[in-house]
Every structure is written in C-alpha cells, then in structure tokens.
Amino acid sequence: MWIFEDLSLPKILFILAIVAVLFGPKRLPELGASLGKSIKGFKAALSGDGLLGEINSDPVEHTEKQRKI
Image (cartoon, rainbow, N blue to C red; front, side, top):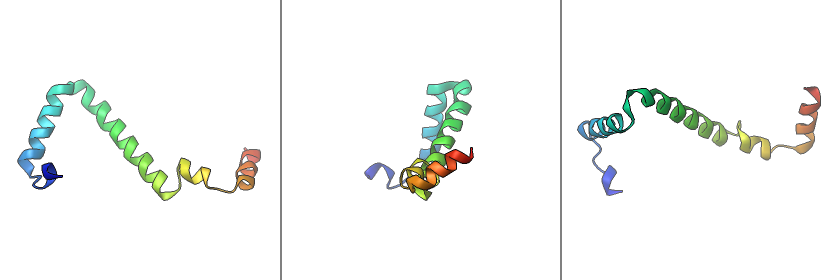
C-alpha cells in the first residue's frame, strides 16, 4: 500500500501519539496485552500448536488424550 511505503520513525511516533490520545493511559496496557495474546495465538495456529493443529490431528489420538485426563 502506498501508506506504508515510507514508514519512518516520525510517522510511527505520530501514530503512537494518536493512539495514546484516543485510548488514554489506562487502556494502553490492556490493548498491549490483548495484542500480544492475539499475536501469540496466531503464531500458535500457524505452527500447528493451536486450534488448527487439534482440528487436523488424528481423531483416535485425540480421544486417547481425553481418556488420560
């Protein structure tokens, strides 16, 4: 996209300043935590450790895991 062709430090700081004004200091840690959890879940799903890995796994193996619990 043409917006991200020249993403320099001043532009990133400007975007972060607007986000800080919109959400305030109380919501920023919550937004950061939820963003981190989203990225972690996305990476887990891509590597097969998440939900997609469970869906594509062998159903017999899955039921044996449930019986052990």
